[in-house]
Length: 140
Image (cartoon, rainbow, N blue to C red; front, side, top):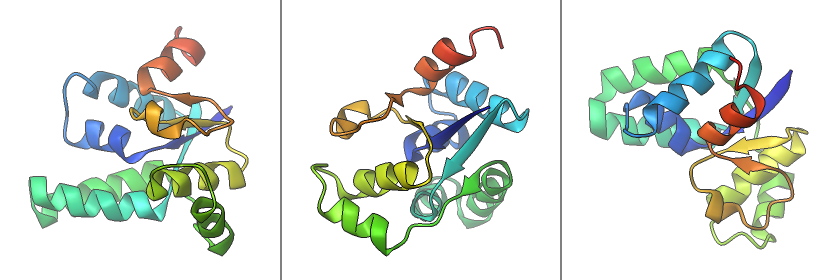
């Protein structure tokens, strides 16, 4: 079974039903929910989701949506080693570097995002939700 790390934009596409990305995010989470893929994220992404969704949906709805996400996704720890790797990396965005090294540090082979260009230094496949589904789950 494939393991994937899911970046914030993919979760936001799902929860905020952002077109034209919602359908592939929903399909991706359906794969995770049906145990065809294992999904991971970080506590930083969860914190960012809370901030953004509270602004969009209000606090109560934001919390309900995040509670659903944390029952589907596994939350990986971010430790000192990851922070140091991110600080010394070639990534232009510190937060992206944290997500990348969280993925690498947990031996996850795919990072799913819409911001592929932000992950140029990556040495693992960085895919959109659409690419991941098309390449690995076309028959699903």
